Amino acid sequence: MTAPSWLFCSVQLAFLFSARTENCKVSSLKKSSIAGQPFPLQCQAAIGYRSEIITYSVSWYKNSNETSLLSGKNSRIYQHQDWIWFLPLTLEDTGIYHCIIRNSLKCTRVNINLTVFKSSENWCDNHKEDLQKLLIYIPLSLGKFKMITCPLPKFPANITFNSVEWHKDCKQIQSNKEFHLKMQNLIIASVSAQNAGLYRCNATFSFMGKHYSISRNILGFLEKSEEPESIVGKRPEILYPQNNSIEVKLGSPLLVDCNIYDTEDSTSDKCWKVNGTLVNQYYNSNRIHEGIETKSSQGKKYCLYTVNLSFTEVRSEDYDHPFVCHLSGIAAAYIILRPPAPDLQGYMIGGLFGMVFMVVAFSFIYKIFKIDIVLWYRSIFQTIVSKEDGKLYDAFVLYPKPNKESQNHALNMLVMQILPDILEKQCGYKLFIFGRDDFPGEAVVSVADENIKLSRRLIIIIVPESSSYSFFEHASEQQIAVYNALIQDGIKVILIELEKIQDYTGLPESIKFIKQKHGAVQWTGNFTKESQSAKTKFWKKVRYHMPPKKQPPSSKSSFIMPSLPSSPERG
Image (tube, rainbow, N blue to C red; front, side):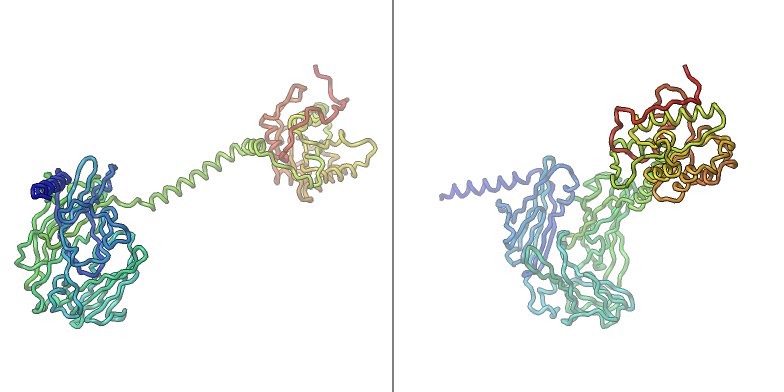
């Protein structure tokens, strides 16, 4: 290929790369790690795109190459969405990685300068230059509680560490009175001079069927003593934030501090950024702004620097958006605002009150419309009456013989005409009415005893006058009926008052007991030959107490209307 051709291709590649990233907001980060260990690299700017409805794409490139870093799961370098996995890192992985995130409205490019250091064969030797480059310094205060967290790089949420081992000066640490191991933390209950030294944490995890190990070295030194002369300087450290999230209520004010441990004469820039841009420049408003840097002495040579980020009002667009605290390219840590988790206790209490209210309301409604509900249920889901219960009749009807002619006529009209018309013709029940269904010459006691046993219900009709029952106490069939109703299992009594009875004092004790146990239904209709309806309030109550029926009523009458010699003729 000629020189002009090479020149043309180079210009074309440069044009494509610049076209690919034009109009993108640009930010830069620095990362470092050790060769031979797994390392995840995340494009943090993608976090701000996840909360949006519009879909986005993530592309990775190394240096100025046009070819995207798309690798398979079995490759050493594996890309998944906004993550790149190095399994493991090599010295050749050192370089600048470009993460480009796009949607239909905007674009962001993050340049990540990754430096890979050669691993030290003997990590116990803290004089080695390779070890010092990634050594993390932790100050220890004599006599105070100290928790050291293994400073592992950020991993995706689906990665779970199987175990974390701790060593001090090349010796493994076990939980004892001096140290306590808890997840990724090493806890020193009370710091002593012997606790100063070189620590190493080693964590293991599984990924795609393979096992990996990652370690970090920490130098703990007594805060009031001189820092080790073997160490050239102390690496600055961002104490807070730690790539964490906090819950903030919408519309509330917020103040977040970035705490940095650095040398007293440090000239490093300490600031808050959003999408690689200074906060004050990005928002250009007083709602979100960076405060003034302050510092407090932490010994002879070190200070705690604080740069706060102030929100006068948290808005919905601030959620799930990383606010990054930067230390002049040396370190960076972000914090993400999230809406408060739902008040489950409030929901549970509200739900409980709602359930209680529904139960009370349902009970109230059921109490009022219980009869209609039961009758409706029977009409929709017709209950099958067992043919093996040995019962022949649905009800045995028992009634007195009043002395008054008017009561005698009304009672006979109810028992011999209205009751069969409603319960037998319209509802399909089968009744045994004493005086209608027994045969002449049969023994009264035998008829009553046998047929009550063959009935599922016992209907007793009573009239107000106690004198009407002057013979009731001596009538053998009534005595047998009441006895079976009170003693035998499976027979329920339906007590019907021909008229409202205010006082049961003059009635037999057996009737008083039935009234107290089963209650009574008061007749509210008229005693005429006019058509009666089973849907009236009185008959609904009677049907409610009657057993459910499956078969529809027969179109033919199930009884012969007897003559009523004692009743006057009605026109």
